[in-house]
Image (cartoon, rainbow, N blue to C red; front, side, top):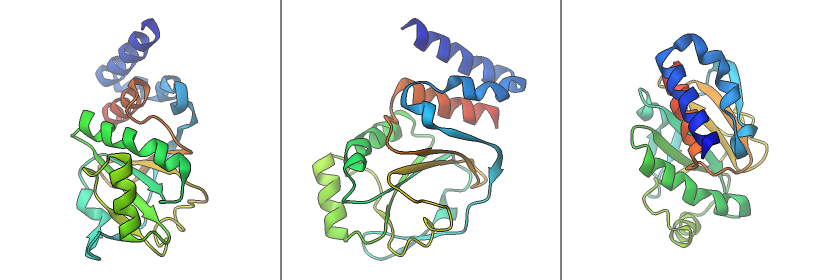
Length: 180
């Protein structure tokens, strides 16, 4: 508990004093230690996702919001473990957008079954069937999560799964938001 309070205090201090933003790396605890923070925001290619009905959904739709974008696949065991924490993150932080992006060949029926089994029906179904976003973003393995600032630029990346609803993850996301 004391460690959590120290992390929370640090996050609040960053929000109150943007000069401390360089200390964001010190907030990485637990699985969030794997989070790579970028020294400068990186451009993200324009992307058009497909929804469950093959409708086109532009990534630009979420400009102006912080985005936690998770690349995953129905066959990925760590993705199955991680997905419920992404839903809980969305519920805990409704001011951000959590976007799970099924990368590669993932049948809509398989995604719907995955969502039902994982209990995450409240997250959007977004597909990148030809990896047209995943490939230029250097997604080499799954799961992979990127955090985008409101300008649509990548500010952080985590390879592998994480408990995104953990206190450490939420503190880091809030600190990123405050430092911007």
